[in-house]
Length: 395
Ligand code: GCU
Ligand code: CA
Image (cartoon, rainbow, N blue to C red):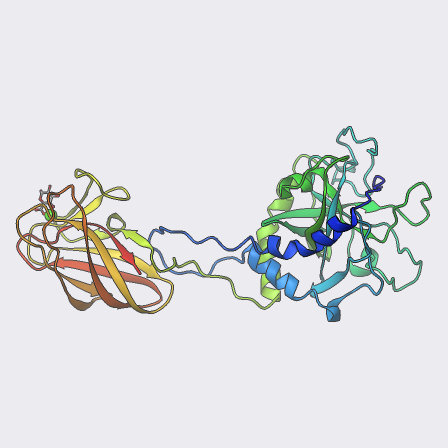
């Protein structure tokens, strides 16, 4: 059972806490790489930010499960609701009070040796090892169907998987302990409360995890997956690994049922592609014997008319883009080259001389690109072959 929590939130702090979560949640914008090795634009997994946005969009009155409000364990405010955001998937946002219970020792004076649910060896869960969340032990109103979210009415049991989101972080957790039943008289807590989790859950989410001084008043979203296939097995030693191993599966499953499409991973415009990721016609080499190149080297084509380097690039969207080549030509004559995209010539670009082979300049040309992978070929039109090519940037 859960420890007593008698946190009296300062009213102003509680009001402020209600205003903060949106900004916090939005902090997890997908990061976009600035330099990406060439590769196909492939659909990948759903991101936590994408799934959280989909969950929040479904936390609507029409999808509310409870008819009476739950209590935020930290602030005591009766403003927490549970929403069925997808078939069999239930979400709430509350604070996080720290549960120290179970088989791990903890200095918290409220520490109890038991958790409601056990690991697969029958041992009480360790709050320092296993990220778990806490639900009401019974239906506080003693009526059925329960006016609150009561796990037994929703195909849930111990070690039921959930995603927990806070401040740009996303972790897996399991249903590990229950909030005190309504027959407990030694505490002001009751089973309507939502918003408690283990020390380990707090640590993984970046929330102060002390049982006496830790926790956060709001902004923690718990997304619970019902059904026996979402029960996680394992011991205190390996449960956390087993739980986290399910996170991406859960994100993808929920992302799909929320109707989204996975993001793709082409780089944004402005990405730079190194020539040394490409291929050369006969006699060319990728070298690093002149200073100032980026990446691991540069393309040195053979000295011959028609010598070329192919550089694979990816574009986020189709359209006319500027290709900016970084090059050097330490001779006394320019090295003009035709630029082709996916086998079609798009014109001749001059590559004027540079002070020496260690000095790099840029030359640009506009070309149409398709969304995804494109092959850029630089073909020398004079006996010197192409200039040394360091990279090409798409903008
Ligand atoms: C030199 C230089 C090479 C360059 C070559 C050329 O050998 O070191 O980097 O490619 O001249 O004229 O093409
Ligand atoms: Ca050369």
